[in-house]
Image (tube, rainbow, N blue to C red):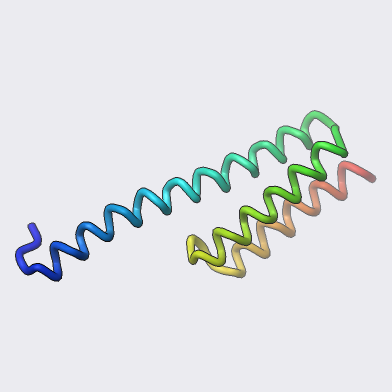
Length: 88
């Protein structure tokens, strides 16, 4: 249990941040799943719009340090390769 006022405040901040981070990560996973579903359905138009949403959400998560910039680039690259494979 946090005893000092500073430790109590940090504990409160951690709770708020954990909830916010969880929501952002969940949102990112949701748009990625939507993209994968569109690719599996062989729908290029829907996949393209889903990719744009996913790339935007991934960049936002990286900007907020939810994960590293390199992981964001790797995710977007892998999703883009799936999109290219769909149109080919």
